[in-house]
Length: 96
Image 1 (cartoon, rainbow, N blue to C red):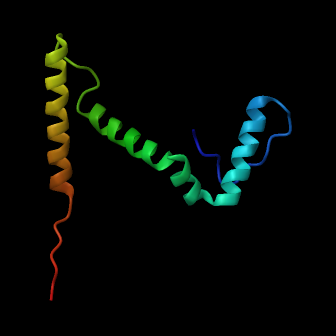
Image 2 (cartoon, one colour):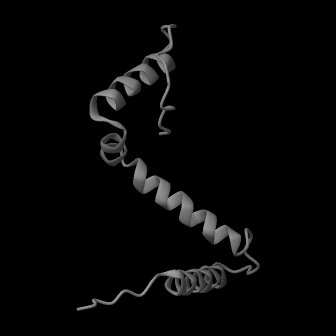
Image 3 (tube, rainbow, N blue to C red):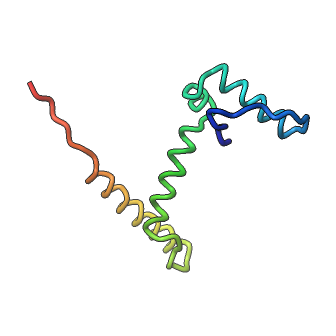
């Protein structure tokens, strides 16, 4: 489910796709964009898509042939990604 643009206008034809989109526009307008994203789960989907993009940056194909080796290769990529994320995260301290 992709959110409509901020300046989206309702479609005039009566096709099912248009009616669903117009209903979505009404819901977004009624709830507000931020609340709609949380209600629809869009934010979670966006986070997953971003993480998949990061994983693909480490290589978009697997080199291993057997399934267990492919699983190990994915685990290694995730470990590298987690380490990069940890290195990029700021370390905060309470100053009194």
